[in-house]
Length: 430
Image (cartoon, rainbow, N blue to C red; front, side):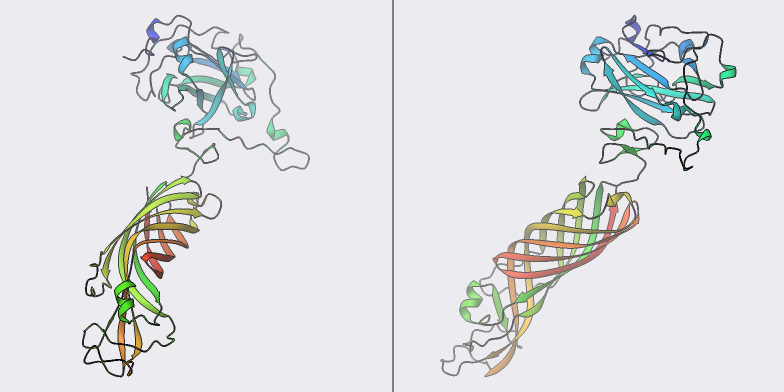
């Protein structure tokens, strides 16, 4: 058993005091201090070791409407040394959600208050429980639980017990309704948090450090089809030196690799088609507008012939990327999510185009079967590395699914080529 679970042996070292600050509510029958702690770690629904405890007969108190409910927690010494945050989770009568406030340290105690406007004029039980977290966000102690909470009976002044203190109360908001000229607007109360564990009622901790009710998925898998295109310079691309050192290869209509002596003309660069790939990706949100990920692809079509003495084509591609998502908290809403990214990885690109050749009649014929003018297939095998930039649009179909369109511009090296790679696919978030 953990050292913290010494709750049966505590005397008055730990107490949760509903009456710990001025104007606090009183337990039934008048004001009293909390009794010695006892463990409820085995109670259904409890969260972590319960070393802070009020006996069952004293887990209830009462409070008038429109009055704040102060909370005060005094921790045992061994718990206090490890505690970094003390959170109070509460739920008002008729409210389906649990709210959270963080108690602030004041000497040996942690204190906080549930505002009177939160209490309002609704009568019924206010339920709450306490959790103590260490520096790593782990729950090291608790007082009560959602299943077995402390209770404060919110009552009308006329039904309060005789011994209950009647402290000052807030004005009734119905006397000056919100939106009426001259009446102040009610401030929006946000619960501070460090992790999702600090938030109750199914809420999550936002990037701004406050609890919110949004279904934001942090991990995304993508499946896409990608088609590569490349820009090929045609001038001199079919000369023997170029085919030996620049990754190009030219093939005649009969499938024989060209090895003649072409006239070097000013042919314009051509756009060629590259491999068709199936790409599997994974991205992880690091911040609301930033993610990092990897892409693994396999070329299913577009492989060219391997020239004499060339390196065989590698269909596998692997890339890393960092992405910036535009808009305010784009993964907390549906609709379009524009993005831009940088990427780098390893891959081979076989790009095919056609070019016109004219044989140089002043040179000795070094290869038979070449016409004076002919059209040949020009292939270039570029890579093995690449860097690039890209952008696209993601259409969120639901909180956990989206359709994706993107376009990349890549520069391959050491065998250079300028490549354009559009893709389309789907993304699933978890």
